[in-house]
Image 1 (cartoon, rainbow, N blue to C red):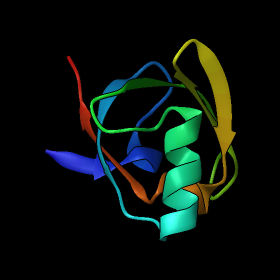
Image 2 (spheres, rainbow, N blue to C red; image 1 turned 135 degrees about the vertical axis):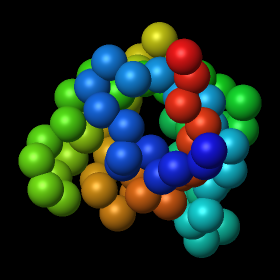
Image 3 (cartoon, rainbow, N blue to C red; image 1 turned 135 degrees about the horizontal axis):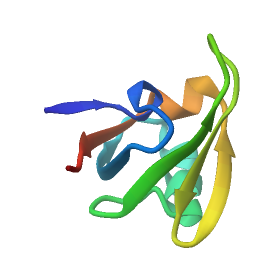
Image 4 (cartoon, helix red, strand yellow; image 1 turned 45 degrees about the vertical axis):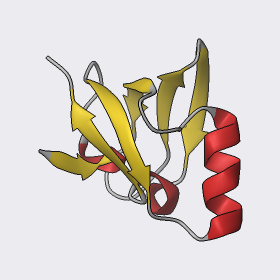
Length: 77
C-alpha cells in the first residue's frame, strides 16, 4: 500500500514511490534524496503538523508537514 511519508512513525522504513509536488519542489526533494526507489526511515516526528526528520542517503533531513505529505512511500518490513 502506498501512503504519504508523513504517515510513517519513528523507526519505520519505507521506499519512495513518487513525489506529487510542483516541478521545482519535486526536483529539490529528489536532490535531497527523496527519489523513487530510495529507502528512507523516520527518525523524529513532532505532533500535529510540525517538522519531521528522515534518514535518507546517510543524512538526516527535516521536512515540513506540507512537503512530507507530497512524498508517497511503500512501507518496508
